Length: 317
Length: 317
Image (cartoon, rainbow over all chains, first blue to last red; front, top):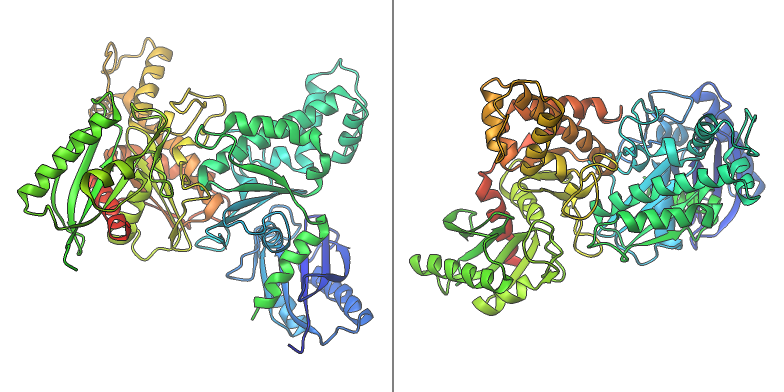
């Protein structure tokens, strides 16, 4: 093979991370740009192209890339478009594969960022050897990747696995997708912040390090919880409970061998995982109790998505 | 092939239907026994064996059966056992495939009754040619069969597709499976009756044909609704709404081309289907709105499950 690399791109609501990956799955170089600061999609594509070009030039790899694989929110594997992604600033259908392919002159394949992470986990991580598993990514939003019978489930229209938009609470919080009560309004980084503000409002007399903060982040809440703040700990308790309940429902759907948790919140450790596991086991059907593992991603956060996306680059045509 | 038939058996909570099926998918003879009247599993197997034997003898087919396929609640394709089925009188793990195989001396394969219906629908019914669809069966309970990439999803442990046990209402009605709020506590025949009794209690002063009935069935409620009874109509409105909301969540999971509805309640026509379709479209994500069909089974109720189960009989070994 005279082109020894693929390029993997992971587009998140906040950051876009990209990396040059060799055939053995080593990320030989990587960098990132901000996603949300470009009002126009075309401006974003230009900025992404320039940043990637600089990385390729720096590594003498300009003519060495076989294909590009992209993981992006609401990315359709079949059409090559991002379709109505609630967490991106650009609306409607965005011809991502076509735009990148024109710029670089090499083939591009795209999928849901969580699907890309699942492919990365299956190839290099905690899901090696598994034929049935579910990937759940906890970032700005909540994403999902479903693998059944050893193959990625893309669905009829290429848009399967939107697990962050299953309903955690009927008539619950308003979601960016226009629906109410979606899992991601509770168990994403932004969902955790919403929970904190709800608790602050409901428990006005309780002393807490979170009080009178208008710019709370999930990291602030994590730090407070680790410092012993009761309300902050309760936020994680609630988040883990909601997620654990939903994961039990996922098990009833496709009976996975394991559910793999990935993303910023997954790094919260037992603060999140203890209530999550308890709610999961309590809510599993008797036939599934004690059988299904909840695992943390074994890949570095940036690498999993970039590696998974890059694997698509080998197949792109 | 010197054995031109397979035998399909559909085990429901109430009835067990079985049929002799030829290679072209014609049910050449069928009969049934009651399921719930045998306190011991062994007695049930004896009764089932005798009834099937009589059918085979009557058709001169005793030595003409290639294999037996069974659809049963919580039936595990991999182990051949019924495992902890909430709607059957026998508890624990029941070695169904082994018991039947010993009796008949021919190979037996089993699966979830709803999976069997899905296979029947894919082979002979509304899902012909579809690679991604979901089957939902509305009977004594609610069952599901998930087909992705053209193959049945059995999951890691053979128990996938228990869609009746996804949570429709968090902390809702107690389910036979021990959990709360399962879809089947709302949208099965028994769920419809529970809704009617709830409405009767909540609306004590409203005149209705359902009042003062201690033995209501879903058929009674259907008849009352068709006769113009407001409360009975509201029961179907609520049932359709709950089901439509949940089907929209199913779409976010596997992006099916269609969801196929099957079973007794599916025969309620627009009473159920109108609120179901409305709630489904209202709750679908923007990317899925207007794209996914809700279809009624094209097979006769008994035939679909028996045909689907029988298809497993050709593969049994």
